[in-house]
Length: 115
Length: 116
Image (cartoon, rainbow over all chains, first blue to last red; front, side, top):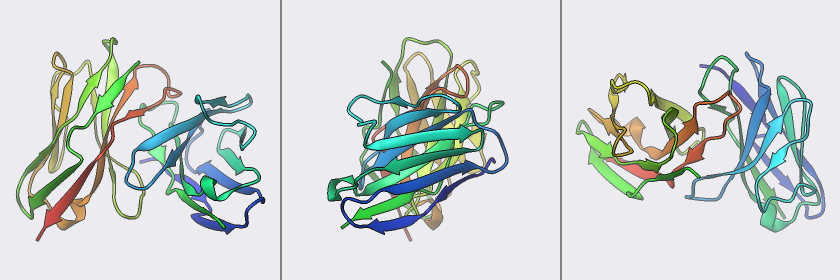
């Protein structure tokens, strides 16, 4: 299957700092990528849809100024958690789908801990 | 709006036995895709099996098979000869038949325990 790389896998930061998470499609191009947030023992919650070359589409209730998404190329989308606070601590997962397929492949996720 | 429901928060099975995980969904579309994803303790989401709604034949992938009942909007996953490595959270997911930019709608998940 297609490979989606997500980095870092785990990050610890101080409250008030910003953290960038990268999502790369390694062997295919992805015009659209997705960012999810997952709380322990819960399902994936879609935060936003990242579109290459245009603005991301955010789900209701997700602060676009808090969670900045940039999709500058067909293989890279980034999620920046700005001015992170302890309540932003969570597991963030990205996914992407090759244009010729109808399956989403997922990154390994990023565990964010804000102190 | 589409919804996906998994009514079993937890299931357990003995090693080598068979277990079935339930999933129902609601949609007004006639063409769509259904998936089962597995999330082991590593938290990496892994595709287990997929089904195109226009196909009547149930999908099968080795020990994993589905029972797709389109009229009933039911999509259950059967795991045969369960192995310890099958222990994970299993998510049922729905996707409209559009471009690759279509979003997935997930169920709440079923935590599967495999007992030795």
